[in-house]
Image (tube, rainbow, N blue to C red; front, side, top):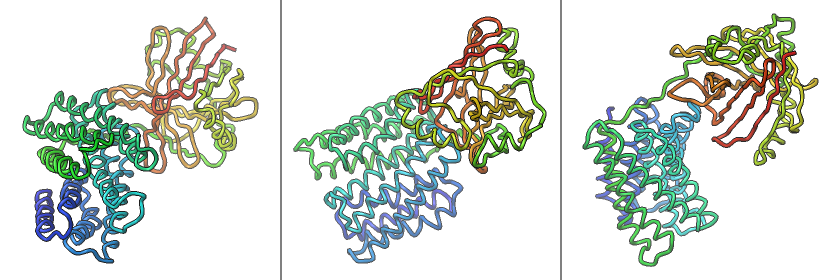
Length: 516
């Protein structure tokens, strides 16, 4: 069944629901979302997932149709539960998309988030039909459900489509604002009403930012661009009234919001937006991972496992055989090159600094890391010597070697070093075995003045990044790391290793390295 036929059937279903509707007229604003806007938008996302549509969507949409055209009855809870199950499956699919990719391609994550938010809309709708006491009036419960169908499902999906066409730093800021706003709305509803005002202010910033981004984006046709501008532009008007309502302005009441805000969002934002994006839905730029992954996964004790299994194996002198595969050796100080090619000739001293905001998490993590003997960093910032061996290991990659680092007798790191090439660029490919999984650090090496920079920051669709491999899935983590190495004098190096999560620095390790 193709897109046009499915869309036509949903429109027919909604028209019949309108003709035989037994509820208040404004209920149709949620019904049209459930019977037309949600299924049509999902068709734009899930073009190849036909089984999903038949198994879960058809029963859900028929249930909504029955609820709209029949008087209130005891079976209504069952029909609402069927629709709730459908939104749960949509959320699972969005979560699955996210887990296969991780924190990369923000525009795709916006679509994933919209699908997951739809389940919250399903819960509020179920609470309304089942007459569950949410602490609010039935009408406010219903309005919260409609909010999560429009502002929290359709809007993130539309933003995702825009990001496929036009993705800048401004887009990342605007997209993030829109995605966190529904959470703040929920907190405002349940905890502090003043947060509702904050959430509306965030929506205003995000929506006006969307209009600017859309005006700068290049669309396949001027007609489509105009339609998208009308869609986002309608929100720029209605959001002002949302702010007035959240600020408790007397003239902007529920009746006004239903008539003006609801209808404008329904017709101009949702309908115009869906038609515009359906004209030509931008394809995803997402690509599968192209780099080799270590086939070694950890068990309960990582350090002990590696040392025992590979005891007596060939040892390497360095982490790299020839640094020329990464950078031109003549352009860097000789000690930096020699350290990587003859690592065992050097003594390594470290000072670990957990940043203040992260110390409570580090203290808890330390109890786990000490047992599994991996990423087992000390809590103290006292300078300590790290010792260890570089052991040959086979894990399905090229010339892999395990660098096992210890402080006294405690294993601190077990890192499996290899390399790979993508589009004629070489990357350092480092695997850290974890229980039944593996953390992968793909680092790009570049000269930084007289220093060497190793970074996981991804630029221009490179492989660089930090990933978690479990089973056949590879998940991009919201972590970034950077090593900056400089020669102090011949035979002596300083290195600074910084780790960030969501761009917030949480760990810095300072290394002093001497030739033995």
